[in-house]
Amino acid sequence: MKKLLVATLLFMGIAVSGFAQSAKVIALVNKASWCPICQANGPRFEKDIMPMAMANKDVQIVMNDLSDNKTKAASEPMLKKVGIVSFAKKNTDTGTLYFIDAKSKKLISQVSLAQSDEEIKKIYMAALAKG
Image (tube, rainbow, N blue to C red; front, side, top):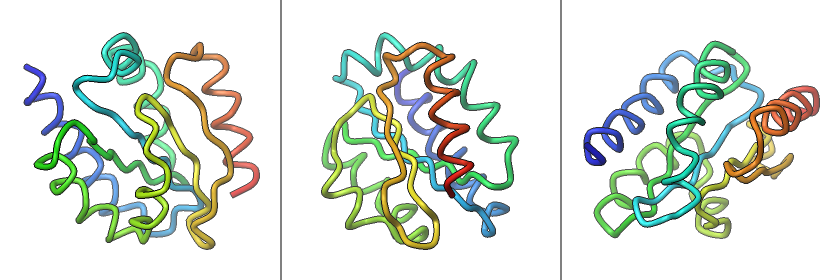
């Protein structure tokens, strides 16, 4: 089940990238199968936050799976495609959602997936306004 979820999320990130070339903000989700924050909050995030972000053409979602070397390698092509490999290597907190300016590749803001939906949405909206 976890492998299916990982594959689905990676695919969703790749699928979103196909039409989000004009995105203003890159939403980088660092996750890992061993991360307690991810385990506790991943399903809620997928259900309540992901659909909102995926529906917005100004946001490009990128999933970065830090579970092990194999998943890290699988995440790298997408990180390269959007030009944030260096950022991702420096910012490795799991259970974290990073909002990055798509042009400058600089951090706008970040939030833990453990935060409430309302807090994540508030930070998301502020990031869009800055992006």
